[in-house]
Length: 356
Image (cartoon, rainbow, N blue to C red):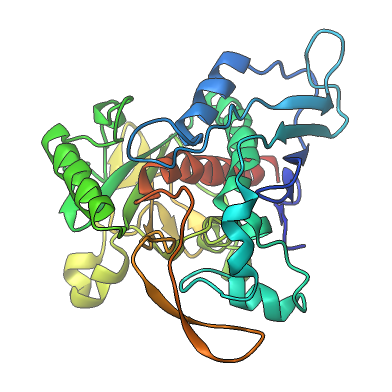
């Protein structure tokens, strides 16, 4: 199903950007698990809108309401855990003209064709990044469960508008170097340059994109299967479910195409009695199966398509070309708020693999 991630640990997301609420039904949580709600709320706050001047001014608390799945002690009881997140601060009138004037770069036109014009255009409807809030809730739980098994998942902004963050060691990444406040970068000077690039785009009524890199350490060897159920396959499906993602790569990724085999191959060695590799071009996955090395995945995010600059579109009722100026509240760069979303998606997939 299109809105369900996972089988053994499944997350079924529902709602639309301007509907009364959004939410998720989560199955596969172990009974007796008592979540640390402070950690859950803190994690979700990293994604929530209105957190700083570089994001949309839309204000949402993103406070989840637990509908089922807990016993009287606040522990998971084996039933599906269902949550609802109220939508409050939405300006639906901002989207009136978009019903027949699809925004370039958005799913407006394809949704119109797919659903014969009955699609909910307000805030992007079911295609909105707003639906990543319940994904972050599920991811926050998965992160806690993975932490109990010694697995850590952490992402940083590798690039925004061509400005690159410091490289993290692919063999032994220092995830503590990634800032916990402001932009999630290891190099604060690079972070300031990224902020300046976002401001410059915003002042012009434009937007910028970037790349997020995620590491998972402590992942045991042997997870995943060859061919269509490989770890890369499962992660790519989850990550491409995040609005705005244009590409996903693992390890050295597309740069491997420019390398020789002698340079790209990771030499094996023994360390502390365990088989490891001296380098990590493979990004912790070979043949669709984890190797025990740090898992490395990157996703490229396009510039926010909702921009203030005038763009060309078509009136779907008349077929005539026309100009479109988009009003409303939009992030000039969605990369910073997508960092926890990527961590959540990766965590959900890894926990699913751990429960197979």
